[in-house]
Image 1 (cartoon, helix red, strand yellow):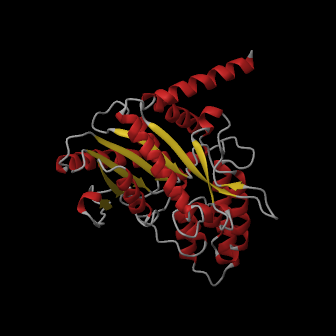
Image 2 (cartoon, rainbow, N blue to C red):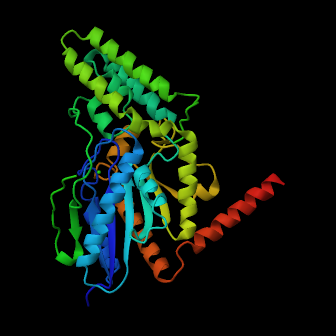
Image 3 (cartoon, rainbow, N blue to C red):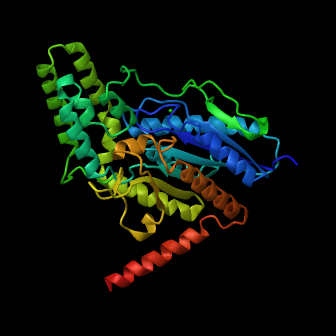
Length: 376
């Protein structure tokens, strides 16, 4: 019996990520979910690589336009008679992009979004220890003229640049079509399409401000230029320009008010039937360190309930855990896939039964009552 429903799983990479960010994870989730939900045609689509510079709103607008086209195309070719549902899955800064995509289109019938799943997305900012540890490494790289980039190593591309594997600066670009690396259960095998192309460090943070980051980048670049006679000056300037051009995009992590507002609205959107959950990397305690996370975590119980740890005991630091969470280098990768599929299955069942949002609304109500009692 052919599938009655269509589920689109749309994956979006984070800062300086790419089509390879998720590896085989999308195909694996699609396969497991297809086996568990035979009445659903599951299609996993990876959003084309996008330029992570400039204002976040630009990336959001491009994503909304691309997503609208994708959904229309897939619905037109789907043979089933049931509903079409969409789940957005984002890694790192990609989680902020898909969050704003949902919040800006809540009333749109063209985007039937069932939920949002984020992976190690800094909704409230980066954990201070991440920046400190990375800056310490940057000092050691100053003789190579790479300190500015290493000091700004808050994401996949920055980390690669700090270790000498970053690419050259490219002009801003938006995805040009809805094609991407995707897989479709109805095809019976994985099909590949060519992509053409897409929280609480405050502005007054006690540990590092956005202005300070820019100052460190400039100063570190100067140190590298002065201390490395063998290093090409134009290359150094290129790296500094590259870092500066991306500060606006990364700068979202220092907008405390906006970060908190986005997170609260995203959780509240679940009352309207849009699910939300974030899986964050957790490095367990060791002989030399306490447990560590890449992201700052919420303290409010109702919001914290939407965040689940994904343990990686193999990674040497938070950034490695962050960029390797979809690879076999992470011992939590298979559990991450299993939990993702379980969550998606729960959302599908709840949507069919008209329960999507009801349980969450009740939970939020209870949490508000508890908070009120504590204030009395």
